[in-house]
Length: 377
Image (cartoon, rainbow, N blue to C red; front, side, top):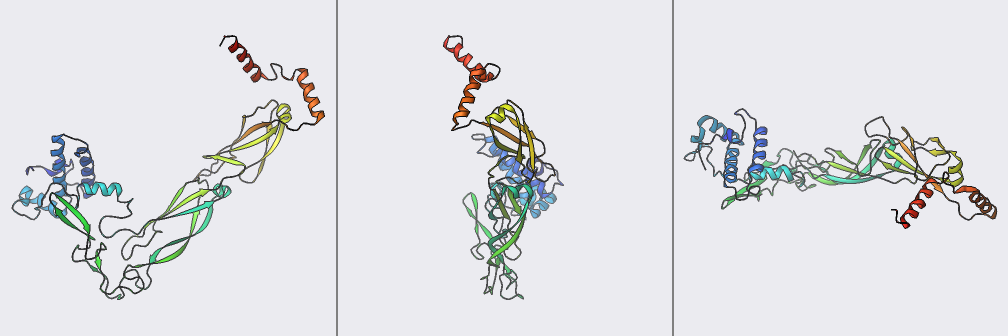
């Protein structure tokens, strides 16, 4: 590895860049020049090693201070910042990239001070409750802070947990295996980063106990089926000094027998008798807010025609607006006719009930069928 590199130039940051900027630059460049993305590219491999070397120094406040003052001389001959360089999968390097991508999904943070576990609960609400919003009481089996030891895990409140001397509170130790560094949970404190000399008799040193908690969840108007609500800090307690996890409430909206929802719009399928559709009529339909409204069905209405009612639809999430309601007409053909009804319909048909202007779709269809058989189509 070359020793005359300008580490700031390698990471493409200024000398006054803070730790966040340095880490962000490192992740971007490491992903760009990673050997797996550039197979057989020796130049990319060299660049990747330089990026790791620079980050290994600049991410550490002590190494960075030494480098700023003495340059590369600070790392020669076992100086204060001397280290193996190269790939470091423990204290930075690709470990940081994978931690950023997968750390939260694994339910923890780097080091022994992990957050408490996240919890999930399913809540079912009615269609009307989703429209108006509702508050629900939920019971969550979880772990809460032990009251006996105030979450310290120690039976003696005057003797709080000690920082583990083996990992210095990190909860893990690194061991070199050939070219790589491997991190493992600290065997002394079992990954907690602390030692308790006299464990609490109630929680056995964990700082938490199992308990059912009752919470009130405010579900806003306009939520859809599958909506997830996050309650920060309402998950499992993590013990003394550890951030609690989060609680995720998954909303399930029960289907409605009359309405179908598409976002903020509502569709209502309304059957209309054949005579009503032919002659025209006025029907009364329900609205999701519990009111009623009248809809005029003009003469000659066909199955599938929609009538739009503005502002009669579903609530819009975090807004006072509402969607629209669509009346979908289905013309119903009568069954089990009486003798008189059949006679009337036969008279209607004989009187030209199926003429071209009266039934344009069927007339047009059978005209095309005739052309098809005559080879015109």
